[in-house]
Length: 132
Image (cartoon, rainbow, N blue to C red; front, side, top):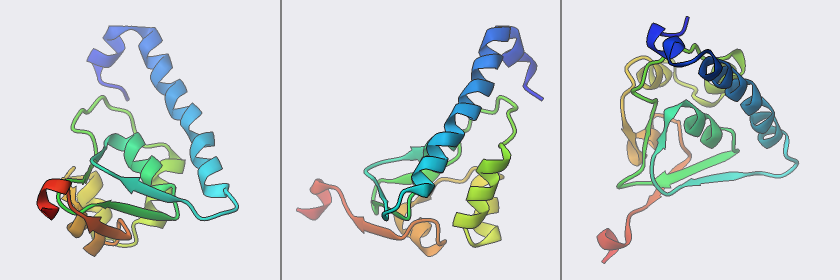
């Protein structure tokens, strides 16, 4: 059930939100079906559901150690996660506690912690400023 303030904005806006969710599924499916390995290199944040899902749709995920953050959006408009979304998350995030922390508590997770949690494969590099 969408929050009342979302529906009050415009019926058209609600239709667009549902269209966006439905239109995103073939993109995710196409990435997962590619005949070669893919790598998501995250130079910064993977915020909100779509960016997070897009990153996890790759075979390998690399992010910055010092600045990159994975988190779900803090904006709650009442949309539930579609089945394809939750299925991908469960398959890519092996630990139930890590999934819970990301989805229910909406906790920000930096690169090294995301690697320890098994969400990303590598948290390898710092910013140019930290390297010098």
